[in-house]
Image 1 (spheres, one colour):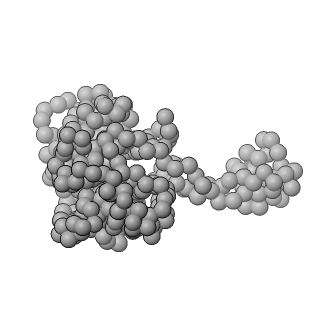
Image 2 (tube, rainbow, N blue to C red; image 1 turned 90 degrees about the horizontal axis):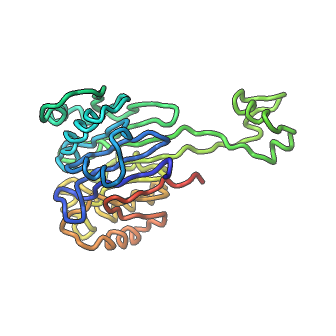
Length: 301
């Protein structure tokens, strides 16, 4: 199992189909699990995908339309039923506080887990850990919506030929990495920057500044493409993207792996989303998502 991967739990938009459940996406990141937009049926999809309640550490809701949030009630009750031993933090638009509270306490159950509410009111950093920084950006949709972005801190890659030039071997390499210098040799002289990985999750939105900010330089971008390009006017009217628009964002932002999802029930041929994305000029790795798919985060360059 990949230490960093996306587990797709559902890929439908407003109306589920026989093949597509409502939204739900789990990002595994070095032993931590972040659940995005748990729509109706997410708890059952987790079971089918081999995702346990204990795998969850954070929940990120982009907005309070049902296909992105109705599964919260079941997921929250499940983490309490299973007595998850660690704290779980939930992020969601502050304007939807009343919806979160209704879903959290939709029915009677015994609370056993510390669930911390962290409503989002503006762009910025939500959490910082040793492994990543979690950020939010405002999107453009008929109700308030935020996208999320995970950024790993940059590290350094040791260069064997430079180490050899300075006669640095064995335990001294580790000491140099920890302390930044050794016998007059600076770490920068024998290493180079290893860029941290980046992941972004962009759901219901028109094209806007936030979409591009979230996608910039991503190794893996999960983005809605509710409509095909011929229905662009509908996309604008209802606050969504087309396959071509999503692909152009990915191309301009330098995305390595693009995952298209959140498909309208009006379309029955998913390969058309791929065709239109390629026609828009995106040349990186491209996935048209389907339920229960697993997508590894690309290896570092």
